[in-house]
Image (cartoon, rainbow, N blue to C red; front, side, top):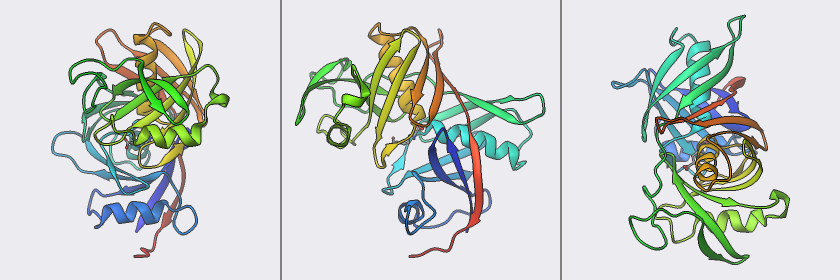
Length: 279
Ligand SMILES: N[C@@H](CCC[C@H](N)C(=O)O)C(=O)O
């Protein structure tokens, strides 16, 4: 099976062109291909499929085999893939995902290379798909949550997938390996959540470390950066335009006046290969 390895600022997935056919047993395939010792190695797999509603359709599986509803970094990589592999000549591409249709805009260099991609991530939802601690309608903003490391305050934002944002003074001081998985699986979420730790640097800059649902730590999370920017703006810590520094690089997030969150960042193809299924 041929594949392409790509990353969006270090969030690395194995991309499979499914325009003609789709492999079977996708959760198992995601687990075995993502294995960094016995497989290709990656945070998961991403399928590029035809769509009857948009230019293309994305399916994305975390490395534990669970299917995600949305992936910000993968959507930028798909834009680069379909352009560079000549599946389209459009520079504004629509992408069907499990959380709706997203619009991807290629930002080209003067020599015709894809320099970066801007994704219209749609509107954040502040209680969708979540179980707020106090009631089913109330927003969960800096809600105190008891953990084995003491009380932390969680702000819940859905960017098509669930996120819990925790503001911290210094990322280095966070007991990340304990709190990440504990908050991911906390009973407040009906279906686990991605957890972001956010250190504000200024009203337009923040640092983020992410523990992703279904994968563990990744070097970057596009939906997580958007959720964090929304949480920072909502709580008055930042303005509506912010650069988020992640372990793998930077993302520029703008919460536009029409309510949509716009994410801009890079996308890189690393290599192509042929995979022999193990199971
Ligand atoms: N890395 C992603 C998000 C991937 C999905 C997530 N782990 C989930 O299960 O919701 C991104 O860049 O947004």
